[in-house]
Length: 370
Ligand SMILES: NC(=O)c1ccc[n+]([C@@H]2O[C@H](COP(=O)([O-])OP(=O)(O)OC[C@H]3O[C@@H](n4cnc5c(N)ncnc54)[C@H](O)[C@@H]3O)[C@@H](O)[C@H]2O)c1
Image 1: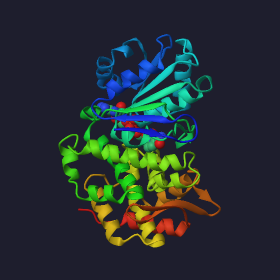
Image 2: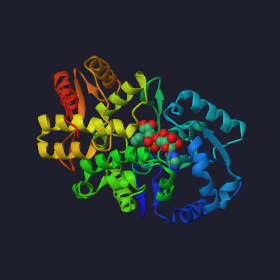
Image 3: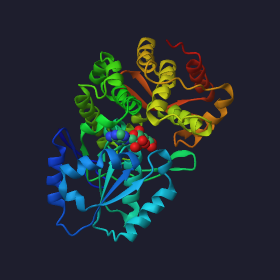
């Protein structure tokens, strides 16, 4: 597949995906570089050992690149890590004409995009996403960012990568938990923007995805998700209205994610939190925008065999509401949500009050699971 994402802001991103992306990358580098500019590759601890060797053997030109590494995980999306990377780029002589290649999941593409878009007022960068979530969502659309304290994505830029190269073969080393994590964004993309993709997902056996490593039809699903996201982002790069539909499940999902970081135990991953957020927000959709109960049940039955239930207690409700205040989506005493009329039909900017949100949390708390 080859797409061009025209945003009207920054540059248009060229997006390549499929088994031959490394040839496309070689061609792209040939055109973009005369050989004198320095090239940097940002990895995390896992993608350095599991993905970098494959990239370097497929694109020998990159063997001369300087490799930067951050610890794997959400904690690297911090101002401290960004500062270390700016300093490393300076120390290694990066200039305005250098290129940063972000090789990793959403943490690396968000962080690397942020560092590159701010270093010397912006240097070129490209993304090579290696997680499913990175491929279908985080690397697409030009949002970069880091977290501020415990609140996610509070600092960042809208700045598109010059190109994105999606090689689904990287998913072979991604564990099943992370595959399922990324699949939540596929489900969301279908629900907000594409009835045919939703219908395809409903008939898939996600068990095969979880048990058997990469699912045979996954490449096409990735391409469909990317195309839908591009269609939405092109119309509203800076998220003034339409792009907000991509936040379905994220308002409550982000609050669950932040809650899990406050508590002891394994924190919720982004996709798992979004999956649980979609359950609450589909309940709000049923109350406010006529989403059918049967579609809500279908969504719930897709989510629960694969995504762990995260306990939300009565005393957590205050924290969840407070977190949503920071989530850029509150107006006056109401919270703004993207809600669904039906699968593939989303409406941004629907306001819900405190008690409606509480009802959706009670629905979640009382849900019956097999
Ligand atoms: N910018 C956006 O539009 C956008 C959209 C959605 C999510 N995000 C952000 O993305 C982040 C989550 O992304 P993620 O789920 O990819 O997390 P991640 O980057 O932490 O990757 C998850 C784990 O998988 C490992 N990994 C990645 N690729 C691998 C591979 N091929 N083989 C083995 N291990 C691999 C990573 O090292 C990490 O341990 C969050 O910070 C979220 O806020 C951004």
